[in-house]
Structure formats: C-alpha cells, structure tokens
Length: 236
Image 1 (cartoon, helix red, strand yellow):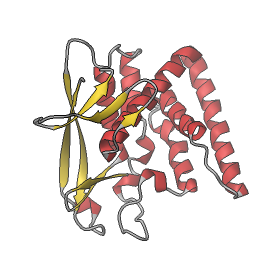
Image 2 (cartoon, rainbow, N blue to C red; image 1 turned 60 degrees about the vertical axis):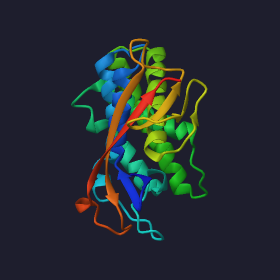
Image 3 (tube, rainbow, N blue to C red; image 1 turned 120 degrees about the vertical axis):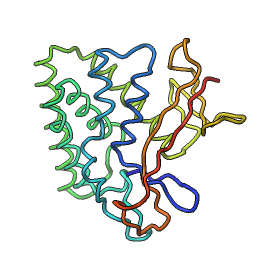
Image 4 (tube, rainbow, N blue to C red; image 1 turned 180 degrees about the vertical axis):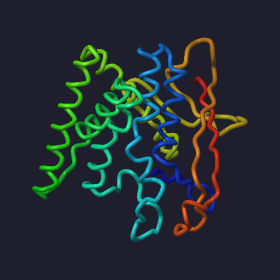
C-alpha cells in the first residue's frame, strides 16, 4: 500500500495499481524492451504478491492508516515475496522470473538490518529459494544473464519512477533519469523526465493509477471512494 497526500486526507494506492503504472511506462518506453510482452507483463505484475494483502491491509497503530509497503513486518514481507513469482507462473515463466528477480533485487539493494537470528535465517532462506527458482527458470527458458540483468534493471527503474509519482516524492533521480514537477500550467498534474525516454515521435504521455480516498484514517478501505489519478509526463 502507498499513501499519497490528497486534500483533506490520503489516497491509498494498492501495490498492484502502482505496478499497473509501471506497466504503462514499459509499454511506452524507447527503446522497446525485449521480449516485449513478457517484460511488460513482468512490470505489470512485479508487485502481484501484495495484491490480496492490500484488499485488507494492517493498520498503523498510531495513525490508523493502512500500513505502507515499507512498514510491513519482515515475516509478512518475506511471505508475500516468496509467493509472488508462483502467482505468475501459469501466465508467463519469463514474467515470473522477472518478478522473482525484482524481489531479490530489493533485498540486495536494501538489505534488512536485524539482530533477530530467526529473521536473518528467514531472509537467507528466501534468497536461496528464489535463486534456485531463478536458475531453473532461466535454464528452462534459455535466457542469458545479460538479458535478465538488463530487464531486471528496467523493471527496477520503472518501479522507482512509478513510486515517486504515486508518493509525490520529487525530485526523483537515478544515474540515468531525473523526474520532477513540470513548470507552467498543464491540464493534468504534470512531471518532466530528463532525458525523455518515450521516443522522438511523442512529447507527452498520460498515465493513470487508482486509489481510494481516505478522509478519515480509520475509514473502511473497501467502501472508501475510488479515485483515478491522471498524471502527465512531458519532456524538458
């Protein structure tokens, strides 16, 4: 779950909707990722493990708001990410492999700090289990390490851009791209991307994400009003 300030409350955006935004970025990206359908599906499904959890998430004990993805307790986080690739296996083995790689990539880039031996052991077991799955799928698919590293990096990049947009956390910078609010008046809430990654034949892209507006932190998420957030991306 992602919470975005929204007027008198918050917009609660499920991880699956944030991943939908990542998939929209993937489909418009230039150069086109390959294999196109499989990579776009991997982007769309990269947080599939949290889809059911976000229907009825735990609540923060202090605020009453849904617990955000980075606030999940470690055991729950590991359980969701362990199950995630298997939810995609019957759809696409390649996409399932990318989901698994995204999960282990998160743990490699942001290793959890813990003094609890059981948690450390659980993290190690998750990493070992996912690496076995990744090796088996890569061998079965006959895909190279270089290709997988390239597409894993793309999904991580789209994930970061989508999160920054959903959280309204700007500017957002990586070694390869910068996202910031667009100056001037625009019909949509708009943002610049530099360098422009969507090809010379277009100078703008509209993306969207859905969430539920929580005017009251304790409101029932299932009955809260659904809002579609439409965002504009423009070149500098």
